[in-house]
Length: 336
Image (cartoon, rainbow, N blue to C red; front, side, top):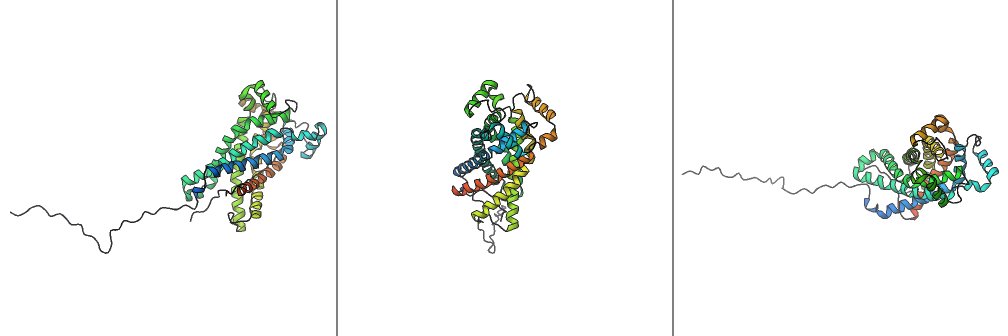
């Protein structure tokens, strides 16, 4: 009998193409993410707290005059220099330091969450998106990171800012920061006392911070490209020059964008401003009473001077403190 079963087909092996398991190619990143540990983020938060607390505290006299110009334009209506002269003549030079404690403490806390948070979020975005996508969308990453970090920071800043504005508008309200906080809670409760200005603060601080970090990043990149500077390899003087120049540009842009909300924040924390209705109703009444163009322009020059100087100082101090702490700030790089 003939075997009708077909013989099994023998697979031929090619001698010209040896059957070797090809190694898996793993893409490498231009970033060393291993160095961005919890310690790095804590250093970023400390540097951010120092740069914001110091700069806002140093510019407290400018902030006092700027706030007076916003709250009492019928008196302080002849510019920054005249405002300084009137405050000193009526209340003494010490009045220029009104709210210094609330300013320094509040912005140290806020700066830690803001600068530290931006580092956390932009590195996380870059790691998850990949080098090329992150490079192509670095401005969007700056904007999103700044918005999220600022929202968290404002939760902690708002109570201290409420204390500062109340002390500037009513110097006799209390004799210290703890006393001011205690009386605000007693008079208005925690929410109305500390967070009546939270919505306008978000409208002020979030666009301001988004513009500050995005514009500074773009300005610093443009300066480095035009000057052929590799920022990681640059000397301390070059880094400082880039930080200061890009900081001034970012500060002026951020000041203009956030000024209407800054005016609203100053006014809504003044006793009786906008009536006794809901927050939306009060803000609407203040806008109608003041006028939108006035909100956009009243005290703008003083704010540009203050924020331009402040922002330049912040980025310069932040970069310097990070260097002292042995940490190198995260910068976007073009993929290989």
